[in-house]
Length: 591
Image (cartoon, rainbow, N blue to C red; front, top):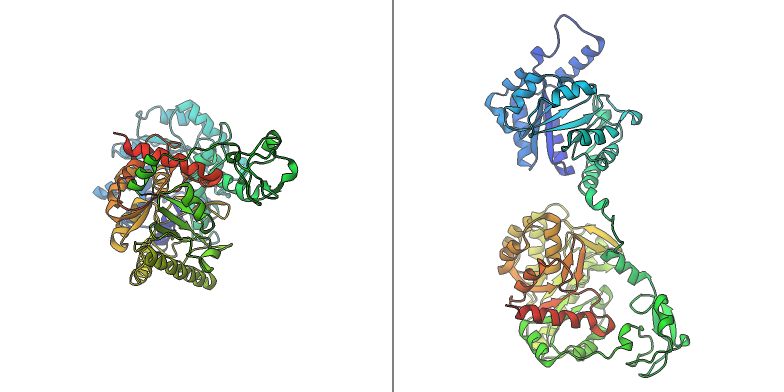
């Protein structure tokens, strides 16, 4: 029983949807007068590992407490009777391959009104047809199965899944006894909607089935890859790079930069430019077509050559600027481009996005405006290799995170002294070391310490998949409905990132409008951009699904700053920010 409970818990932790038991009444399992050598081996094993109905009912309760569905295989009608009315605890039943022709058992299980899985191993096509054609239209799923333990690669016969799908025109599954768990992935690719796989704590344990079972770590891999199968197989359409690719293209690619100061009206020559990273401007494919053209604006030495250099861009109308101020729109800035952004977008509200180097350096406050409103975004990274994590077991990561937090809080405090207004500090706290409860308890105590110093540090609502270190990383906290009770209990406030909210709704399947209602009283700060899919964040407003617009519009009515987080909005002299301000003002004014 102890090992059985461990296996159930391991299945849950590995990401399984369900656990299934197997039961035989030992009194009528084998003939008392006739034995084959193999029978004696099997009888000894099932006797040694026998669990009573009461024990299995207890295990089923344990499984359900962990959120697992629970099923059981029976070999005889007497097996069902042994459970009496407690048989109702099971969510589904299974017919083992060897009982495929046991029509009375099948009828009894169908009569219980639960879903029935039917393994087809060890039988020929006519026998399979005979059983399946007698079944009702709904409530059952055939499972392709080869009754070897383990199944050799050349015996798997996965093509039979295709045959089943075509012949029976219904959902099919695969019951795997394969030596290699990866065979299950091929079964999924061929259309298996359900995969049954044995689990063991150790393949070297004594017993018959361990070699055809998976360890919890293998199950984690199987669960991860099977759950992401649809995403893995997507892309049968025109190629569109994802957001992470665009970020890497920017960081690793090149574009042209002014070798010296270029004045407005100058006709461009190749000798005016150097080709360098990052790729934030015109590249190889475009440069030849603009050589000889005259600049519509001056470029400082080292400035990227962008499309803006050839356009006369109109300033935002004063009415739009005033409306943006009224709504509370704000723009992200780096320390070095504050003055330029203030000049281009006089909305008097900005959020400093700091790198870890900037957070640790001395900051020049002379360019800050006492009339403006500011917020500060903590760096996601504390060095080129590690994320912000004030509770890391890694000493370097933990100490650097706390140091950056302290320095950023000091920056916010000085801005508060300068402006006389609150300066919230937004942080992406994304690492769970044990469980959600501990995560929120730890961060709550940390943030209370800063609050006692007069600085509000607020965690950001996160995406399900974040673009970190050049790739997509799954985040386990601050992005799902399961976080809401913890937020309400432990946090004074959060930064609601609308783009992340939309991505989470697409990934987890919750209602974004319902979550807005649940989080409204705890929302102190807002980040705004559109989104698509599960990791396409930072889009121009209106480029995502049309159903996103009411969500974005709702957040425009909140108190506090609304920071526009359109990706690369600062490029081309803030062309993306300009579009976003116009779109958001228009959206706010819609009836």
